[in-house]
Image 1: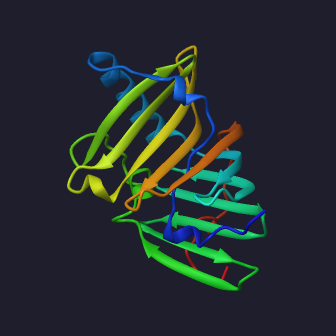
Image 2: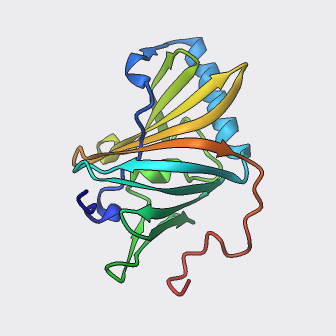
Length: 202
């Protein structure tokens, strides 16, 4: 397995969810789903999941994802211990093998669309498509002022009207695609103080 290139330079998350079979749903139905997704992202707290991430070069890593509105943390077990924390419009990535710390702003990165507080799917964020498959719904987002900065696609399971985030995919401005597939998704976890700290001293 090849080690991934620096995650922070081509941060694109997503998953092999069976969304290729999704079909676009224009009109009022799409608007209803957009409202549901915005509500989910703004009210779901203490979300944890097992993740499998595929980098643009085909490398694969596994670990745990943690999410609170405006906050994201990825703890990688493979290909080696790494940690990514994003909050407050910034991202810090720590690679224990290379003993490196990389910082970047999210203002020009697709991931920043997920971590706005609150998430407002309209205005500054353009919903480029809403698609449905069998018990799944997918929404793609771009920054209205500069859509060429990249595309964020979120995939949800949709059973009995209840959404669960199961996939994230980011296509960056260089057309590099990274996918994150989520399983064992749970909510209501209580994260300790400082869990989403950007401090390099952690």
